[in-house]
Length: 389
Ligand code: KIV
Ligand code: ZN
Image (cartoon, rainbow, N blue to C red; front, side, top):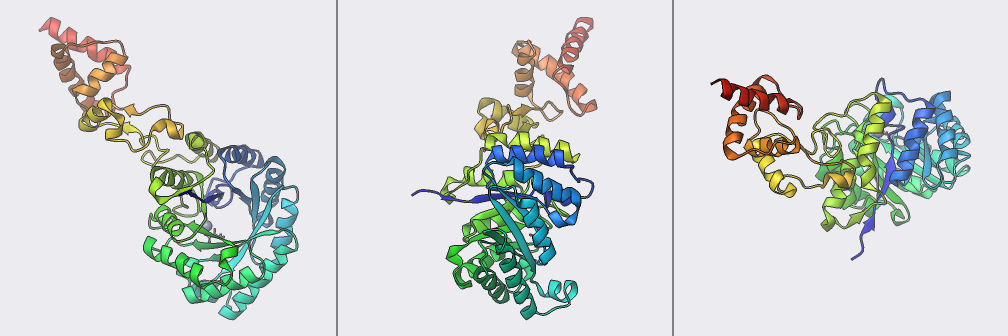
């Protein structure tokens, strides 16, 4: 059975860039956009053009630069926003306007002081207006995660009738549980008129650490576009991490989904985004964190040295990481020490290894991590101690 393709909508340069202190200049956004296209994403959300002249310029310049990838600009359900986004997207080969409005009762009451019926009218009008400028219009129902499903289906039906090509169902506050979010997508698939003519998109925030799990639940229930960011950056606790979705779909062929992406570029992109934004990737971050392929306890190191697959489900080379790392710490065993010593040019007998291991342990207890170059000193100490004993 052939695999179904899931489109990747990267919003690193829009939602991701909303991280405080991570604002990028146009030249930095261009650098990242170029790499995103090389990675193979289907859509680059380049910014929110009405929000600032800088964002307008970035969307416009990315539209000129990018060759085949769709370029998207965010708007509110406001005519001026849509006009400005359309202007910024003019040079794009495949422009997409992403417009929408809050649909949860909380947004309707506190943000808009409005009613459900009025929100439907505004949603319909925004999509219709955007269709005057571009064919490809994505509609978002902000806070869909906390929106009553029956009402959400009515808003989505109005957006589809007005010409939306993609329906984005954001869990804006990261509230939903995977089962619940999956059921929401299923409900919409079954209750929105003509839904078969549009793509359902998931956009999950990570407030409860469930963004990736929710995105996968959405795909399994009918979503065919995932909105995500490199390193999972974004508002508050961030968005679904692109690298996690890609590798989950690859490592679970039984799910029967595929993407257009080249995972070998994931590590490079992660570093680029981290550098340009000045935002460190947490060491234990799945797939791209410094410790994602590092082994420090004796039992694990022994297994990995015998066969990498004992403790790694991903070949680091598949995501552009040169190799697994064996980190020497006080928890390391003789196997790791012998392995590292050999790399540094020391072939040790069993007896010599016992002697060096004793020195190594006292050294490692003081120094949290023992560098490869420290091994020279450990060797000297081991055999000097012995000579003077
Ligand atoms: O989280 C969200 O709801 C959004 C929309 C503006 C798409 O980012
Ligand atoms: Zn968002």
